[in-house]
Image (cartoon, rainbow, N blue to C red; front, side):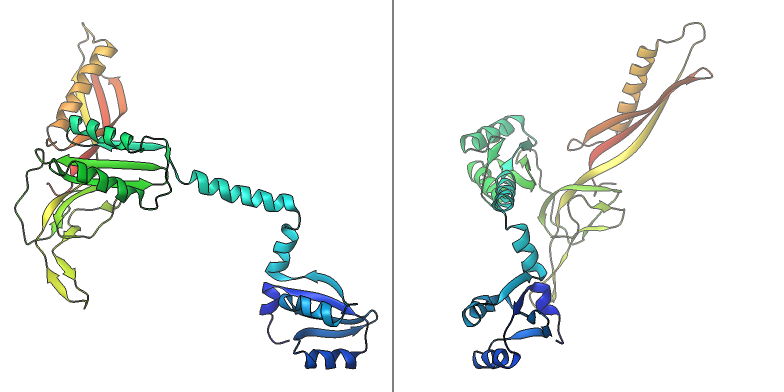
Length: 316
């Protein structure tokens, strides 16, 4: 046999004690395809396709089936026992069931009152975590529901699903002051990880959770049409992301009246927060604050804090 591919998918192995000439005549007359035919002490030894099994049993009732090779043989051997087949069906069923569960629903936005109303709307429509949903476009369905209900108050909304978690973010119209349309692409002014877009016009060039560097194009002013021809676009929007800073503050300790550790820690912490807050706009905030160092050395108390901020990546 020239090709071993049929053996990979599955072939039946047979033995039959009849004359070779009679066997070959029967195979030729009934268009039966056989492979690896050999004459042994027990009789004729050959392989045939699985789909020919019924035909072989009809033509040669005394044929003895030995085994099945390849993928089909493996599956038949594994699932010959009903318990294994039941276990596979149960595993597939449980995976399908639990993959449609939503265990966390996070809502964040610029208006606390509107945030509570959105949460109440979702609960009224059966979207109170944890809940089960078979909707493959659940994020889009929830976004359309909220957008239709609060169309007069929302300026921007985005719903993202990551496995069993859904995150809804929004901005109300009173908070957003539209910037004028521009013709230049929006580029990153600082290094960070993209978290969300507030883009009304332009072509997004980066993705959520992507690390960007200063000078990298975030929103382009060119879009390729169906004929791969560039078309100019107006650009307006903002891209927000996580940025990271380390802030240091020092305080001179008085030998005669040493500061208590708790008081010194509190004063240095407030100073570090004041330093980092001075560079934040109203739409930016501190996400995480980790104290890296707090020590006394040669009459000086030093504190270092690592900050993770949510900032406008397009702002210097």
